[in-house]
Length: 417
Image (cartoon, rainbow, N blue to C red; front, side):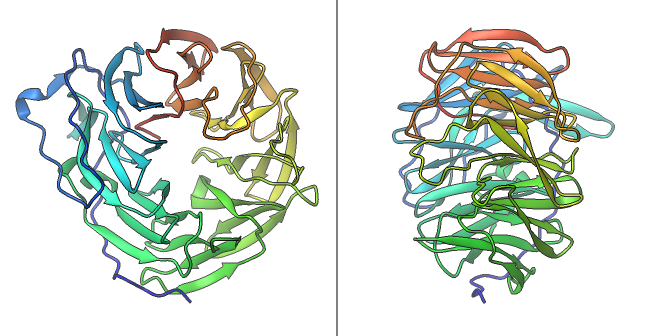
């Protein structure tokens, strides 16, 4: 049983629509502090905030030496923030901020665009993107999961898990609940609507499964039939999956069930879920000895009946190729340069949208490769080979905007889900 290090506190969720706003001008970004501790973010001066008539998304991209923030409609570069090291991007869950896993801290970037509900209407605001003073000191900062209005940070080097009300980021340093796993490992945690928490089980040398903890962080149940547990996704009806080297674990209504792969070794370590679908999209690898396997099949995990179907794409892809559309459709960016649209119910490939040229996945996972991110009805695809980015309308299947970038892009995310 895991030890409880702090009592759980529940917070009231503030309304935070996913729509974002468009900024027409930008200024210098604030420099971030060294990760020596957490401090409150300075409030944005009212004079710097612009109210706009309509909302638009913003995009955040890493490059070697920093982070770029783009306008999601025009793909115009709004701001560049210098930040050394290999940086990983995660939506914070409030439609405005991005959490950066970097060095020895989780740092928070304000994309400078958000919406607020006022009665029956939404007002849209914008300001200059900047790296805030909000940060969470961490030993090997890893995965960030947002669900049900909560954001959960997992520190791989210590096993410390911090969770907070996503909406509180707008006011500065949020109040956090802290829990420490029994052993540190490369893991992930998901806080559920009722306050319970799902947590991977492992140590520095192996990972074996998933545990369910109650609101006081006492263990309710566990399943350790999941060698190499990695990745997570949430499907319709708050069903959560994690990947194994021989299948997946499916959490539903207080129970954790093992779903086997069609092959003895069938790894599903990267997953994407949608609240619009009971089916989870996962990559599918069958060679445990490969330095880099280039799979051409994806897995569809149907959480309604705990089955797995495999779909042949006819092209390989990478772990940054997976996404979900606004209607729950499965999206895969292939090395053929096309965005493959898959019906999760039937497994049929319903469209192939050419976006970029052919590419090959690099052996080192930290190296740039074409990356897919989805916001609303738009899919965004980067092309490091040409330092460019492209926007695809998922309703029409058209590439509606493209732009060149001043730096080679690596990771990509939006601030919304």
